[in-house]
Length: 458
Image (tube, rainbow, N blue to C red):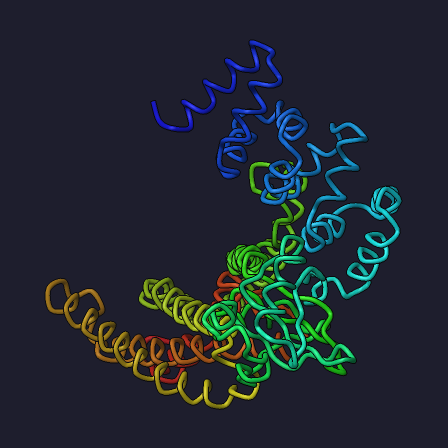
């Protein structure tokens, strides 16, 4: 019996006994990840677990649940518990939760907040949906540059309990403009009479409240920070974004990108929680687009009907098309990932094209050489391609060279085109690139065959 089975068994026993106090003590002693696992295993008791937990533990558990689970539990909670929960939730978690709820529900919940919290919640919800402003929390500690270390420590003792983190302190002027940030270890090792200005390093890194959330991921990744300040266009400090929110966001972005690369719309909730009609709706759009693309393949085949009379050309169609699709899928995946990591921007399109031309040529030469060798080998042992086998080998090798080069160019440039048009580069999914290259690959293949085999096999 593993640890989870033990947790579930113990919890079911306490539920059967009906002792609320013993259940509360047991749940409060567990890690919040263990309580989350219990909610996954015993979903019918999710609301009861949140009701039973002490409010501090309930808030932390509720914050790490996915939204569908949060929504399911929330509808079963008592009004007093709902009021207590949303009042105790950190502002950034509350904003995230409110953002996913329907507008009329949010209006009812905001009324349950005290005036100061209500104003704060409305301000955070006022930022664009995918902006840094939606991630930030206004709970942080600021200090003035003329303060001594002794005064800073007194300030931390007084207000640190309500702060999201005290790992970093923020230096502001009298107008609220952000001047610098200081890590707590620099405060702890400094002399008590040292002034804040004397330990400022002026290597400030901040986010703008209207920046896209994806930009925040890259800034955190490159600068190894646990928290970053958020400012407006005048440099006035508005809040902070912490690494835990960035990790959740990065996971969501990665999941969405993987789903789009696979040729489907991003799912809004875990796979097993998605209804069949909704799942079909998410997948049908791209399948229809890809199907219509493949119909163009049939049109191309009709155009080259006379060339299809040669059985030799039909034999090599699958390998030609798959090679082009594979090279295009490779290129698109590499560029999409590079864009996501900030390694490649729109300005780099020409550099990428040059690299893909060179790599596409080399890859095409490799596969073209293997194709030529394959024809030669089969001809030597089975005489499979008749008297003109050398020309067949040339057609196969040149077609592979052209299709692989074309696939690399299409796969690498399509993400740039989509980004330029304001779309998500991940939408240039591997199936889409493969379908596009299939159609054009046939044209390349039959054009080469018509030129090389004219008057011989055609």
